[in-house]
Image 1 (tube, rainbow, N blue to C red):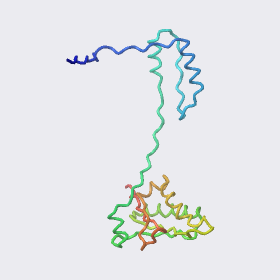
Image 2 (cartoon, helix red, strand yellow; image 1 turned 180 degrees about the horizontal axis):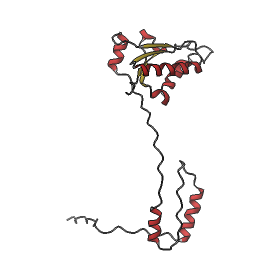
Image 3 (cartoon, rainbow, N blue to C red; image 1 turned 45 degrees about the vertical axis):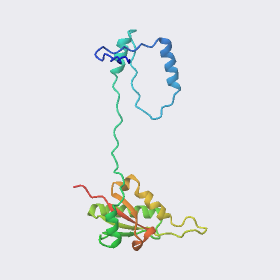
Image 4 (cartoon, rainbow, N blue to C red; image 1 turned 180 degrees about the vertical axis):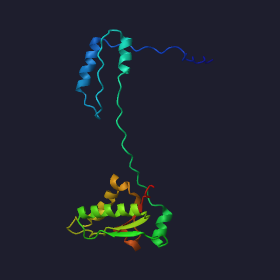
Length: 190
């Protein structure tokens, strides 16, 4: 026959923590000095210990205010373009509001032009835009061909662009295929 499990009495006061001895406190401080923190925190003011009573020391340590780091503004995540919207775009049932051709531009110029284009599209309330990067030459000795094709998706994933766009995907072959991207522009808040 099994004995019933004893149920702890939760109404009883919790056990008090044992206070550290001077030797233990010195050991802890020497270990803490040798440890490098993973993240920098605002240094909490060290409360001076004036009494040997462990209860009052424990209470005094709890009263030191600790500042929490200020929350960073959240950047909206990217979302894929929906299957229906993509099908409408590729079949011509959904109109592309604007096009940008980045052929022949340097990376620096292309980045500036793309950012300005997306800001204008966002401000004007456009929904879908087509960004043409070009396919670049595949293979050969010049491995730097198709730089914009590789860079533009990385740029669109940056926080500065994510506040302007909802998402992007490779375009249909009729709109440029691998060398173009459908970009859904985020609605401007009123």
